[in-house]
Length: 205
Image 1 (cartoon, one colour):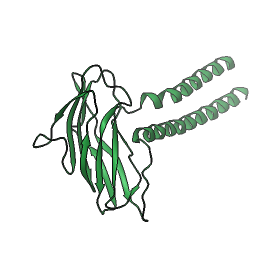
Image 2 (tube, rainbow, N blue to C red):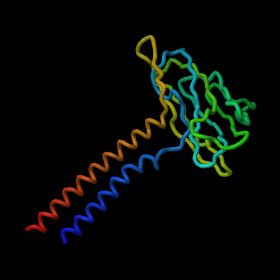
Image 3 (cartoon, rainbow, N blue to C red):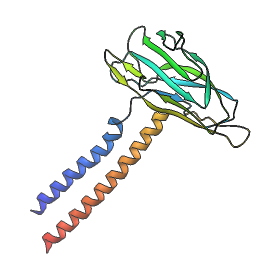
Image 4 (cartoon, one colour):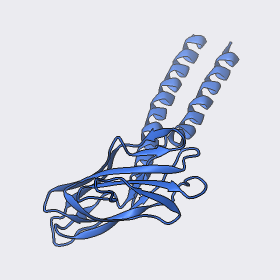
């Protein structure tokens, strides 16, 4: 009987550990990323924000639809090797607050880390500036996959200079998911150990 309990406990513990390793990777969000996506700025300063693909499966294009707040978009540079369709009113790639452009690979599919162009912005005199992916920001592969939500957040610097680190939001999100998963595994494993020792003690009595 004791051997059966030990085998069951070890089997459950193995499943928990395997899940801890697999979950963070299976839950990784395949999302458009911005670099930089955070940091501090000085009002009136300008910067270039690079856009990077993170496709899922055989996606070959994307409709970029971004909304800026607290900053003025002054330019969008499309990547090479793409068919580009200007989708903003007036058949332009961007306005002062939006980027709206369709990108399709001339051949092949999108690959992770591939450039989707860059935007240049000038920060307003505000406390916070953001870039949001609208619900119409979608990847395409015959069908469409929505990729919406907050993409970048910047705060006004308290001094005379700002800092815009070289980071991507998805990397930070993946780290967060791993930390959450590890925490859950620690709780579950501790509960299993307590239950195991209690049950073992009762069997001895």
